[in-house]
Amino acid sequence: MFQRRRKTPPPAETPGREDRGHAVPETGAEREQRRLLQTWRRSEQRVMRTWHAWLAATAEDQSERYRAYLGALAEEERAALAVQYACRSMATAAREAMPDVAGSPPR
Image 1 (tube, rainbow, N blue to C red):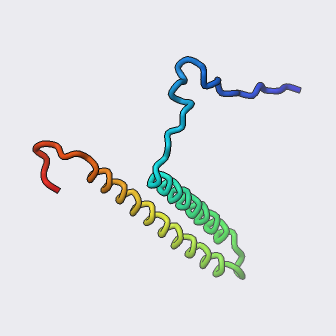
Image 2 (cartoon, one colour):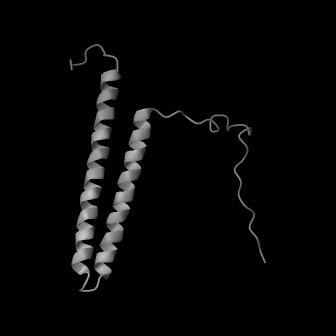
């Protein structure tokens, strides 16, 4: 009976939106970090699914669900460590790329 009008974003030519229509190119490191974050998020979701499956399990399949939950936890931990390692590597590379400032301690 009633239909809502679909919200459409204003065109890119609208004044004040000049900077929003252009995509910023991604570096390889940023792309890799995004991929690692997505992997971590998916593994975290798997942990939640297996946790709920374990809670809902019957006595017959409870041990199997628990093993699946432990496997998901281990996978999520590996994904988290990969993200942590990538972030530290990017931070180290950014620090090394910064110009030396007079009076700063040597590296």
